[in-house]
Image (cartoon, helix red, strand yellow):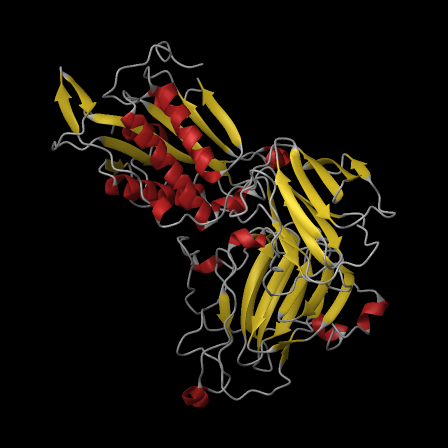
Length: 604
């Protein structure tokens, strides 16, 4: 595929196009470096993991480096299926790769980024922007942690190291790391090892921030904090302590006659981005509600901006500007309710090419609460031990030796990966199950996992499921199986959120499912898909105690899949499950309790 002639003269493209088309790589494989994996994600197989490494004593950059050392100006080549960018890696550089809904971002440290700005470079590269320690490569399709892109390092014939980035909707591989990784190019001269220093720090960007880091075409993001808001009087009842209940003012003096502009819209699968360009001194106040968002813009007028639009996207059904006593109100009708921490994200970015700052709103019903739990919120209240009373086991505040026992079942395992997409189901379910167990054990519950490692209980799937269910031996209070959802590609955007399944195997199974669903949704802010029942799930049907199966999100959804890769979200899911189990134990919704009248006969 040839680039337009105008692009051949761009400062972006160093080296000839012909050179970019040739094979620049040595046929001998470069030395492989064992990757370091962030968070709780398991390391990818060696065959699928690029040779990236975090800075270490052997890979830190040289002290002496030319002041004019820069990174950027890639050589670009490719086809309709994939676009390849080859970046030379200067000595002393660190970088982080961050996939987003609008493309791939590279955060750079230790060297200067060569400024550049170009649009429509190739079919898979809609824009390239570089400045202020950051490079943004826009794509017409969203990127997940592993889909839509691939990055590797290699040694070219000259002996220099290069970073190869490939972009294509059908590509898989990513960088083999959750949320990106800080990377360092090794010094070219090993004799200079005595002259090493720590690399320039690079912000470790989590997967959650990748959801809000890339603007619609025409914008770029600077690596700096959001504009700090000046105090404004909150609306009655507004919780301004919560990060997404934004109230603030754009720095500067408000000029007379300042007006709003028509919102700029960026549409990506599963999420819609609205960008409001606000003049200096303008105030803003964002209020979520059951029908969407209200953005109160203070001190500005309508001017000649468009005032409304219908059927903007699946996430934004309509928006409308209306004058108010304080300025202008923007009403956004969303496809589902929004709360102070779910259904949307917001950030304020500094001016780019004008004096106006940008208030950025990302809207998606799959956006959950990704804020970290406080240390206090990570502690589950104690559960009293069990004691005998009138022939039945009940909860008692008196000292006793029997801890209530529950079974936690991490779905799949071993040769059965479960659903695959942004994450692999068997890995996430085991991760969450361990967190749930730790919370319950600390609260005085004997929590037992059906599997402690990546394995199946039996090679035959039906036998495996029956063995899991039968671990609910006499004296066990309940059985909770943890799973991740998925749907076919044609319906991926319709599948997001949390749901809980039950079966009439026990009179209290429906109530257990109800308590679990309530607490998970409350802690995570995830979309509530409700209680599902009567599907013949073997792991529930074969259980003889109250049992429920929770689906904690959809790995097939572009936003929900990112939730499942976020450590804060997994913390919240685990706390929601553990809290639901505790509530069930404390209220008699367990094998030790007596069925409530409304539960006898099973279900709604």
